[in-house]
Length: 241
Image 1 (spheres, helix red, strand yellow):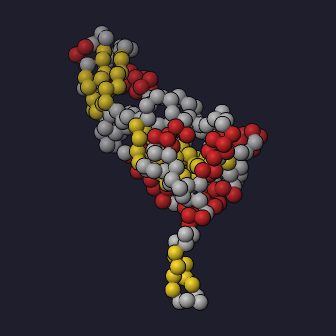
Image 2: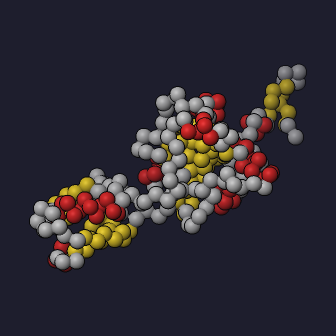
């Protein structure tokens, strides 16, 4: 939910910035939280662009509300189950508060080993994630069923669109955007021509969706025209078929 709200705030500013993002899809000069990049850019321009999509299989980072078990092989009296508090800290037996939010399990294990090193001699510690936020992606814009979807298995962009009910009649298939959070301050928006991929039957460039990603399908130009336009000669409105 926390990541979903972050991405939702991004989409509120997207409509105003869409034209600028598409015009500068291969540019790295604009230092804004949205680093837009076109799917059709060359390899050389991509190498000089801003923040890039991260590795496909990143390690999970702890969030407030997560729970994990801490086991001590040689000192079972310190075994415990802890929850990450809203401020990112956990309260450990005989040690006190330690900040762990944003760390992976191997990093947390090392953090706890150092914390307990003050009272134990190089303690072997095992950390097992018990309760955590399930992986998800968000589908927004001109899809049949916008919303938050659980991410199970290996899902590509076109498959994510299908899970969200597919395109609507007003969608712009050629400019589907995939938002990806690359840091606490940066979100990258990458443009994909899904229409061309499906037309050619070539899905080699169909990206894999990562946990926390948000796809956004904008409206096509024709759908933005009002259904009723003023007829100056008649002083009334007429419907467009």
